[in-house]
Amino acid sequence: MTPDSAPTVQQLLAFYLEAGVDCALTEEPVNRLSDPDIGAAAREAALPKPVRTIPAVIAAPRVEAAPAPEAAILSAREAARTAPTLEALRALLEQFDGCALKSTATRLVFADGNPQARIMFVGEAPGREEDIEGLPFVGRSGKLLDRMIAAIGLDRTSVYIANVIPWRPPGNRTPTPQETQICLPFIQRQIELVNPDVLVTLGNPSTQTLLSTREGIMKTRGRWFDYETGTRVIRALATFHPAYLLRSPSYKRMAWQDLRSIAKTLEQAQTTSSS
Image (cartoon, rainbow, N blue to C red; front, side, top):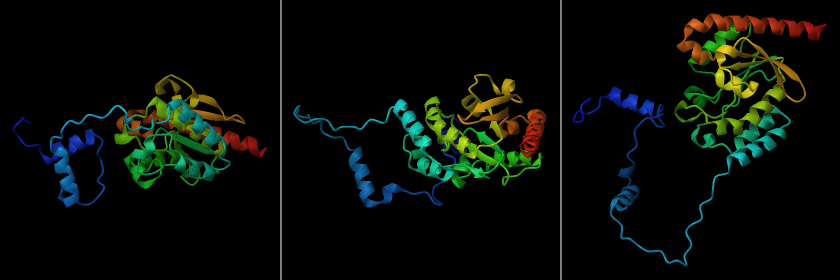
């Protein structure tokens, strides 16, 4: 595209997607300058303003600082610890303002599935479809996850699904380490309250966050870990995120091996509990 040529619709859409704009808020575009009051204010704002000096005796407006990350993490830990049930934990997250992602997301994406499930899947963060519907794993990767769990005789009524981050990062960007640490106490409490027999971390970010490892998913997938809740040790396995499998379908064979290992462990746990 030359500097003098106008961009095509496809080029504009590609630009918006790169900038993180991937959904419309209304059916029709809104010309906010058409409003007489707003238009006048905008025109006035565009005019040059005379320079004014502020007397030294007049204090500058006080700007409230955002809570420090350490304070937000501490607040999250204290709040999560007080939740006696999943319903109470969800209510706490709805009221929690310590994570900036809440202000840019459409809604909280807490969980889906059966709270009494023996197996819990945890991903990293919601995407566009999840942000719209308020449920985890409902887009393309969610449909693949449904097929994955169906391959071992399960469905969403027999599993529990959540994310480390319950709010969508703008433009599906990677959550920052601070955002992850702020949200971590809530997902830890969520796992503790569900109390599954098997915990499955989907992808590298959730695996490294929950299983306290710095190794990549290629080294951790298929390996069993002990996940400590403070009251119980839960068997945990890392595997590929469905979104990664959509981009790299050649790894589906390894994911199938992980699923078979999960099914075997669930069967063993059932046998142990019934004996």
